Image (cartoon, rainbow, N blue to C red; front, side, top):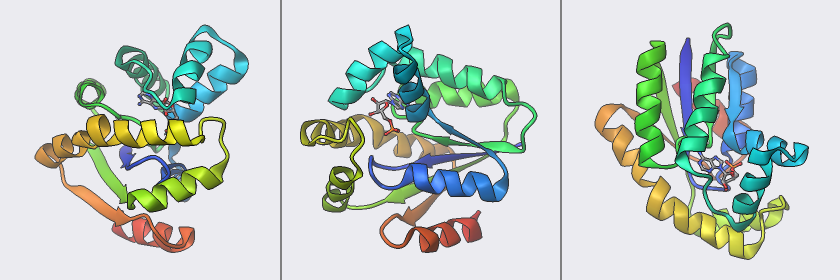
Length: 182
Ligand code: AMP
């Protein structure tokens, strides 16, 4: 069972690359944002709560997200592995994930860090057209990323080797680089 965490700012292309990696390596693509958007479409209690926060660009509370991830990883014992996209986004989530990996005995974990500068990210988010891609939500998301999510990479640097990838360029080229390194 191999596990990959794809990490990086909003708009850097995590979802696109995670999808390509999951197809190539035949591993399960697990996007916390997608799970929340599905729940919002279905109008579940979680979905209604999450949609309000997502539309403002704010984070869904840690205990909810940790529960979702633990469930998904425990229900996924038969596949070759997984790529986690959009989680962890806080130090609390990262610490909880370490405990979940220990509990499930997942040892082969790689951290991929996709990077891009703020102007490029804002430009991409403005062009994407998702319901939470308005300028106010984008600014909030970039702000929360800097203050709350970026420190997660320092947590991982202390315990693991982090693989840095430049996320600016052609999708296929970036994917080729990632597959070579993995
Ligand atoms: P994403 O598709 O990864 O950009 O996520 C979309 C939105 O879902 C985020 O802006 C957050 O509101 C919420 N979300 C997704 N993953 C998490 C997480 N790990 N922790 C808190 N909120 C999350």
